[in-house]
Length: 199
Ligand SMILES: Cc1cc2nc3c(=O)[nH]c(=O)nc-3n(C[C@H](O)[C@H](O)[C@H](O)COP(=O)(O)O)c2cc1C
Image 1: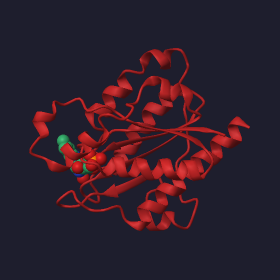
Image 2: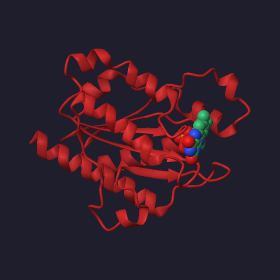
Image 3: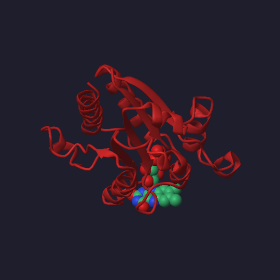
């Protein structure tokens, strides 16, 4: 049984829903799954006027937060971050920056990795965010397993780099069916490749 860690940051909850879908799909694919959010770095008072941000913070703050140990434990990791100015969110990057010691010991290499993101607008930078994550993974010696166009459903969600959700003008779009099945496919694919490597 491969070990899959879903490690993500989410402010307003879209990334949390995507992570939960990935975790369910990973379990259905036979993996042992750790679902871990990256802790909020801002004082909740600074986003109190944003109900979605507050609701996601309250819903996740008492759940286990991501640590380096979750990555060491895993055979496969899916990272998730919202797109902010075409790149990853600062709390996600703070977590990544905390991993230098594990990287130096070679404890992050030779694992299977993929990533997902969300953005408010269709061409708002999802691909650059995913590529930013993948650049870090190259430094780690990670085995990047993008979904590509490896199944017909990838021609519907249209993102060969990972999975992306467009949250819409009011940041309230629900996950579309094409995105949900693309998340299932990403989890199945990464678990399948990890199973082959760990067998
Ligand atoms: C500081 C900041 C920068 C953002 N930059 C972008 C951007 O470059 N392109 C875009 O389409 N959306 C941008 N957004 C919108 C976020 O991508 C969107 O709110 C996010 O995907 C929601 O994910 P979450 O609910 O998991 O936090 C930005 C939001 C914030 C707060």
